[in-house]
Image 1 (cartoon, rainbow, N blue to C red):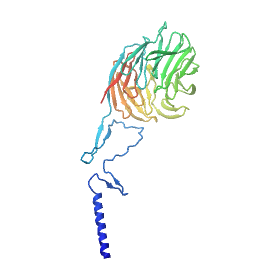
Image 2: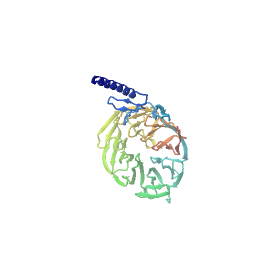
Image 3: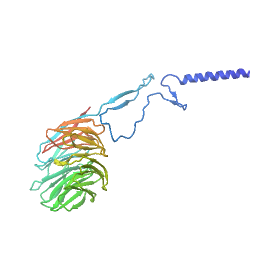
Image 4: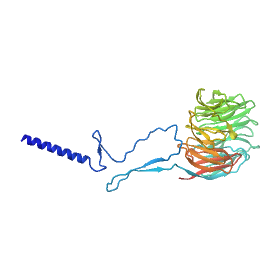
Length: 410
């Protein structure tokens, strides 16, 4: 009896094992057993992509793949996984405003594109323009008996700072959309306004004036620095408040009103707390304490007409123009990763605008695909682009302004 019971139990155990095996190996989509005995879903699985991005992106334009979420039928059918390829984003630019002017085409635009400022040099007029083309105009002469000599304009916090030699002083007249809202006066009649510049993000505005022969004054965010010469030029202002002043073949580096160092080159650009210098036939990257962080033979740069640099820095790349050749795209360790055709007129952290004749091409810094191109009616002078690439302000070489806005995307 005991042997029959034992045999029956063995048979029952074998039958239970077989039934369990049949259950666990059932139809597709019901699950599978892992090596640890856990049941996993056999639906579509996704693999995590690296969270960081390479400092050296591919030199070719690639399309990004997007996963379409699986859907199941009401009858409980199996889910399927499909893949679609998203084409690189592009858009067309539409002309929404223009002005015919003459003289030096001073202009600026806020980084978000919400306000553009353009100066009619000969007419002493300031235009303020919104992204949709709505504009207002102001006579910067005001009540003065003599027309001012305008030396530049900068946009900060929804206001335009117009630097000029006014009748009774050198300095600023400040305008909002509603009109003139204030002045900053220095010196007296006969004093000279020199240069004005803002940092890329618009958090700093600096300007240089000569109140007396042999003396200049630098004003940055309300702080004043007196210089024992009247031959300095304002070359660069960074988002960290670093200012570069050029004098002959030397550059003075200043921050928060304090002199930091002097570099034996008249071609120096500040980017945050780093300096780019064209020196001894080399491109050099300096720290603020004067240490050379990187250098490369033969990649020198200079300033061209309208105070445009042949080197344009961004957080990830440097765009350096070589006359009669294409522009080099370098990383901050001065490794060349690719080239782009044309002259680098402007770059922010997302896009670079290259010029070829009177045609501008805008490239995404994610993968260097072209997002738009615009043919300007005149030779290109200055260029400003909003951070999102959807508002473009362009001047001619000797006057004239055109504002473009993205019309549609594809």
